Every structure is written in C-alpha cells, then in structure tokens.
Length: 510
Image (cartoon, rainbow, N blue to C red; front, top):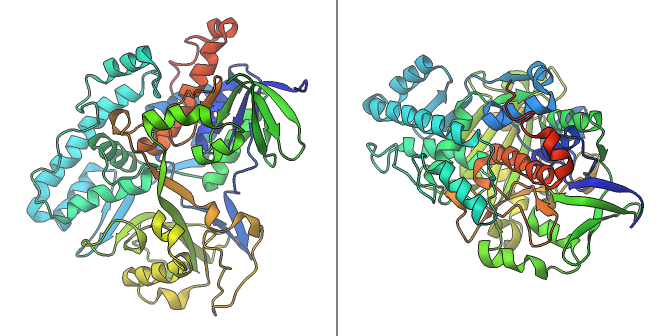
C-alpha cells in the first residue's frame, strides 16, 4: 500500500455519498471522493444545455436536511440559490386536470372545482397525510441507526417506531377508504409516489405512500442549476473542509485483507490508496465488480435478497419556443394517459418545465419509467420510446410536434433530432445510451417499515453501503438519512475524536 492514506474513501457522486463525505470532512476526517464513474448532470446540444433527468429537491424541507445543512454550514448558500414551488405539482388525467397547491385555501378550491361530489373524503385524505407526517417528522428527526444492523440497533429502531401509526411492515389504515375502489383520485394520490421513490412501487407500503406524497406536497425546492448546481455546491463544501474530490478518477478494485477493506486501486493512475473505511454510493451490481472474491456478499443475498432492476428512468428532452409551452402547465406535471393501463411507460409521464440557456426557448424534461423486460429483452424497444412519448404528449398538448426545435434523449443511443428531423451532433457521446439510465429496484425480502433495502454494514469489515438502495422507499430523504448514518458509523468508530464531536452539531437547526 502506498503512503497515500485517507480516513474514508467515498465512491460515487450522488446526494448520499457527497453528503456523507461532507459530514466526515467537517468532523475532521481526511476524505477522498472518487466520482469518475458518474455521468455529467447535464449535456450540451448546440446552444442548449439539457439535463439528464428532471430534478426537484423533494428532501429540502425534511428534518434530516435541516440537520445536514446546519452542520455543513450550507443554510445561507442554499437559501440564496433555492426557491420553493407553488403549486408543487399538477396532475392531468382523463376527465380531470388540477394543481395541488401548498396553500390550504387554494387546495380546497381545487378540490371543490374538480371533485365536488367527494370533496369531504379527499379533504380528509390531506388532513390524514399531514397528521401522519407530523409523527414521521419526529421519527426521522432522531439520531437513529437507520440501516439497523444487529440486535441492539434493531431494538433501538423498533422502540423509536413504536408510536408510529404503521406496523412493522409500514402498513396502516387506508386514508381513502371512503372513496370507491375505482375512483380516479386513488390513482392521483399514487402517481407522485412512483416518481419520488427509488423502490419499485408495485406495491408500495402505506408509510412509503404517505411520506413520498407529503414530500411533493410540502413545498419542494428548485435549486439554481438543478442537480448539477447542488452537486457543485456539495463538492465545493467538501473541498472547503479539507476533503479531496477527484471528479475524473475511477476505481478498479477494493483492496481487502482477511475480509477487511484496506483501500482502493484507482483506475487512471493504477495507484493504491489506503483507507480506514471504504464507502460505496453506487448500486450493488456495480459495487460487486470491485471485488475479486464476491462470496463475502452471499450472506446479504441470503437474508435480504438480491436487488433486481424492475424499471429504468428514461428522459426525453423536448425544446420548444417559449410561447409554445402552455402557461397553465405546473412546473412539475404528472400526465396519466389512461386510467385503465399500468402506471409506467408512455402511459404515465412526469413533465418538468426548465430553462435551457436561451430566453426564447424552454424545455420539457419528460421522464417515463420503462420496464426492465422491455429495455433488456425486447429488440428495438428503446428505439421507439421517443415516438411513443411524443405521441402521448400530443394528447395533452396538440400541435406540439410542429413547434419542436429539438428532441433528444441521453438514454436511447439515438442522436438528437432538429426541427426538420435531421440528426445533430452531441458532445460526450460516451456518456449516452441505455447504460446511463438509473434503475429502480425491487427487493425479494421486504425491508424495515416497507422502506428499507440493503444493509449499510456489509460482511466486508469497514466497507459501508451509502447508496439509494439502503432506504429506497424514502427517495431523496432516504439518501440523506443513509449519508448521516454512514457518517455516524465512521465517527463512532474513531474513539479518540468522537468524544470531541459528540452532540456538537446534532441540535443545530436552520
């Protein structure tokens, strides 16, 4: 092993690993972030800057976000660059088109206008969600071992969850029990959950449905520059606290000795780097490639099951003249084409309005969940995804096709299309194609409270998982909780320094 040594080497550059690295750097640990395997958050086609996926920061108003921002000293920077959205989202479905505003009075008027015959049970649904999430705020605001490992941690988490209105599997009463089983609002209450979750929602636990619907309802945040802007802010903060971030470096192997992680081998320089902890923010399927002997992880598969990709997040960017974008379209709109079909593919679209670097144009960033079987097993499935989504969009916005300036997806391997259908050149073609799609996984063994996936501690000592697969049922909030939990494990393992840090930041609030 070389003399280059870090207290923690963090692999990945999503929210979870970056927040974990920032917390550890703030607490005085020497941290290295290896981010080279992540595709850029945006890309250029001509004069347009396009995102790889829609981004609304749903976790910004949660207790764990306040705690993290307070410790990292991000309150003022975040306030300057973020703004809340009102209405948080809108829904368009057969026979109904309505917004879900943050203001209670405006919400009541929307319900009265769109669902006058069932306004009482729908109003009761929103009150029920608020009451449940007041309890969940208290629960998720505690400093607990969220990815509980071992008897003592599981008992601590179970005792804290005893007051929740959910059972051990996260199930609870149906807040829409007074509505008919085929009422369209039942689908409207489920649609936002599919977009926010990192866990397959077929089915979703009651806790998961309540928490993710509330994350959309409680004033989500637009961050300046989108995910690329937030990513840059976190990287700057890691460096400000003495951490090192190598954005183009990759990892070829995790170095282990007697089932203990000792460091990593970097790809570009072939340099071995020693580490007290190795923390992976990558999906388990990619993480396993870093180990020469994967038998150590068989215990995880035996007890938790191996995560299986169920869907892929497919993005289609449609650039239009500014005046061609409907003024009444909410910043985030969920469009359900048919109430009788499944909630995926071109039948359910998330449509986000965003800037593209030109005052005269706007982009509709459209996300669809494509089933794994279609993507991986059906020949030509991705080749036709653009046309199917455009056709679905035209049902919502007629004459849109005639106004298109640019149509492109970074995920289907096809070149961008100009206004006359001609193929355009794109930068960084290596970062395009099906491999750049993020997967939504299912887990054979249901996790704690219906929201957990993989354990954070692994059979390889001092190797931790800090990816969206640990608490996938909570979306971005789960990533923040996972990051806090990983930093908690590393901090408590260092007895010499932990005494100095204990309780110093946990009570700080925005």
